[in-house]
Image (cartoon, rainbow, N blue to C red; front, side):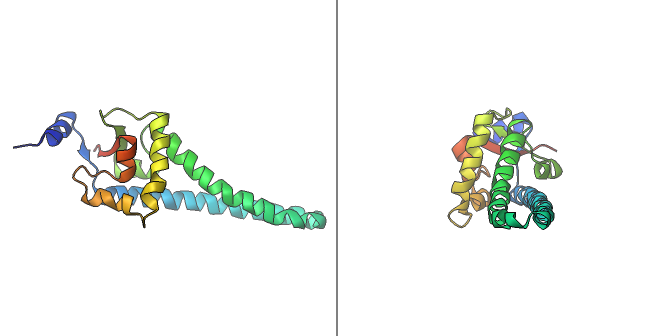
Length: 157
């Protein structure tokens, strides 16, 4: 006998994403964002260094500019996840792994749901990433941030 949940997924033609696929997609996204962030920080540091060669009195502002560069990485990550999930349901990692984020009805998620999902990342991360790991044992393969935002991650190919 097929459970009601299983029947709903089968009729929609989508299966919950496996934990391993979700983890790999998240790693791909993380390395992509860290690479972009490191490149931005390096480029900013070089520009500041060259600028300070001509204006040594401004070297005192260097820590301030480096702080801005460090703050910009979490902002970049937030924009990346919120925007790509809300306008397509996929990040680069999810595209590569054949995954998509949908709402409980299997429809694309809204900007608000995407923001709530990202906010849930913090809740999932805080207790030693237990909320992310929860997707490995949850019957529906949902992490805590999925449950919080009413979303789910599906395998579409």
